[in-house]
Length: 179
Image 1 (tube, rainbow, N blue to C red):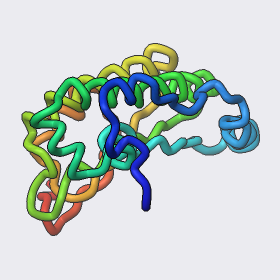
Image 2: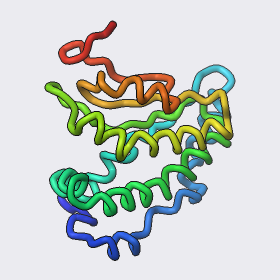
Image 3: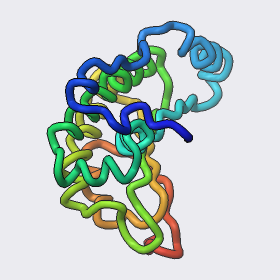
């Protein structure tokens, strides 16, 4: 990425930022075809990874976002809520289509620890994941939620289970105990 569209944005700029249209039917045409063709024989999984944290730093820049998480919490909360304006309707649409697994997640781990403290994860991300997962499972209680993060996330595994994650990817033996 060479451009961060919200790198220098103020809260006012963010309020005017338009997210892509999650209702655009073309976004789902291939998923519908896959579900029709393979849905009776195979699980159909859709990838919505880079869900909240990663998309936030793609738009804002990693350094800006991490600084905002300490100094400008209202901006971060508004940014993540803005991102949900796309992800919740998109995930609900996928649940209605009948996909079997929705793959979400954000790289919140590193080889040596987490990108942020577990407390910060809980402050900014945990309830967002709970909201997203609850909206999906309310429409389709059988849908499975897979969560991806690179590297060490042991301190938040219980949080992920609590918010409804069914599948964890990945367990990395170099920095996490597979047991």
